[in-house]
Image (cartoon, rainbow, N blue to C red; front, top):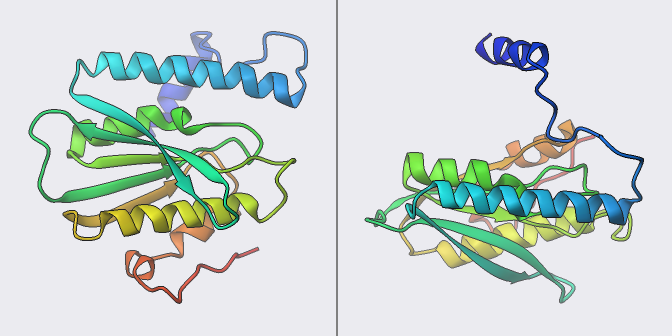
Amino acid sequence: MRSLLNWKQMVEGGVQSRFHRDDAPLSLPEMRAKWDTVFRKEADLLLEESKGEVSKEEISISVRDGSTVRALVYRRTCSPAEKGPLFIILHGGGFRIGNAEMEARACIGATQTYGCVSVSLEYRLSPENKFPVAYDDAWDALLWVRDCSKGGGVEFFMLTKKNSYPETTLLWVRMSPRDLYSEAHRPELIW
């Protein structure tokens, strides 16, 4: 109920959506460029507001076809825990727009609140990359993170995909942390 009240207050107060369209329709490349800039500026501001409590590292992850995808890794800068959770998130955007910075608020917040390492994964976007490239990128990146965290003090995984379609959420929710360690297991798509 609280979020409904906040939403109502925002609408009544004239607060605009993050994706408010205040200009003429944009082509997909123009829209991506616009929002990538917005997400990067927001991420930089959030990192600055953390007052040095959280650091960010950009990494590249190789995927099955030899391409690479970006990921951002957020860590506590002071007194990092020896063991703790690993928070992994995939950006929203309907597989057409978005970048790792889009989820900076969730990553920085999780790192500050829980002392965890947070990883924001990217995947290649459509329509230039056909289905199931985005899913494969996400799965390959997830396995890469899993492999890099073995023996590194990770107690458990928290995995989410937000701002997306229900079928994507079902894909990730159906996968248990145990499945991440089963080489033979790969989640099935639910349609």
